[in-house]
Length: 202
Image (cartoon, rainbow, N blue to C red; front, side, top):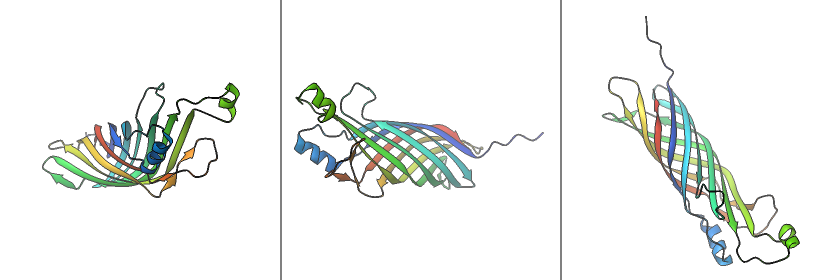
C-alpha cells in the first residue's frame, strides 16, 4: 500500500519583539509634556502557507504590545495581517534561507494618560479628558528572511526564526479614537521585528 501524502503546507507560531520610532508623534508629545510612545514591544502571531514546488504563498499575522497588563496607563499596541510570497530554493546544507515579500494591513493604537488634569466631574466627562487613545492604520509592505532547518532524507523542515521590516505605504495622520480633530502629527509607521518560529512544513 502506498503511503498517504501530506499536503505541502507550512504552519507556525511566532514569538518575538518589534521596534518602532514614531518620530513626529513623539516630538509633539514631548512639547506637550506627555510621556512618549514606547519604541519596543513584545509580539506573537501565527502563519499558514501553501507550497507550489519552491514557491510559497502564505498568510501571516502578528499582535504586539508594549505592555500586556491592562492596568498600565500608557502603552502601544500594533496588529498586522497580510499575504506574502516566498521561496525555499536557497539552501546551504540543511539550512533553508527563505526571503519573503508581502503586503498587508496594520493598525497601531497608542493610549496616554495626562497627569495633573483638574476640573469638575462633569467637565472630565464632557469636554476635558485625562485619557486619550490614538490610532494610525493602513497598508504596509512586509520584507523578511526566514531561516528553516531541513530534515535529512525527507521533504519536511522546521522553522527557526525570522527577521523583517514592515514599511507603511504612506505617511498617515494620527487620529483620536471616536473623535474628529485637526492639526495632528503624521508618521509613516515602520516596524523592525525579530521572531522565533515554532512550526513545521513540507
